Length: 77
Image 1: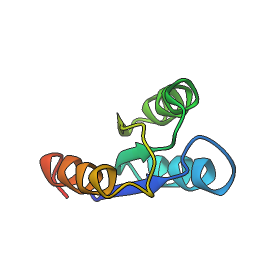
Image 2 (image 1 turned 120 degrees about the horizontal axis):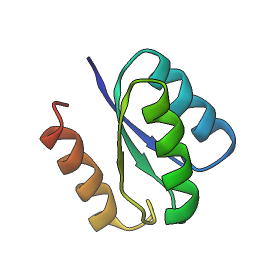
Image 3 (image 1 turned 45 degrees about the horizontal axis):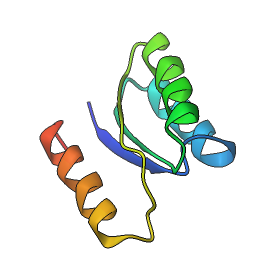
Image 4 (image 1 turned 180 degrees about the vertical axis):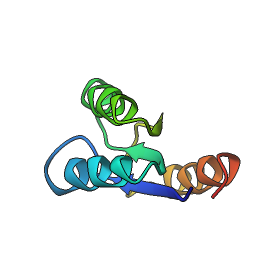
């Protein structure tokens, strides 16, 4: 199964992509600024039989981008 980083995963296109990859049973590393909205998307992802890792933060910060990649590697990416 692939591991996919989805930024802006709490709404719009990011959320739609997360759910589409969930249907393919990917492991999803979900990122957006708001934890509550990400947690909701993570619940939807898990309900579809996929795995979700919530990593709230701002992708304009280099440290957050590094963390996203590290989490993806940790989860098989």
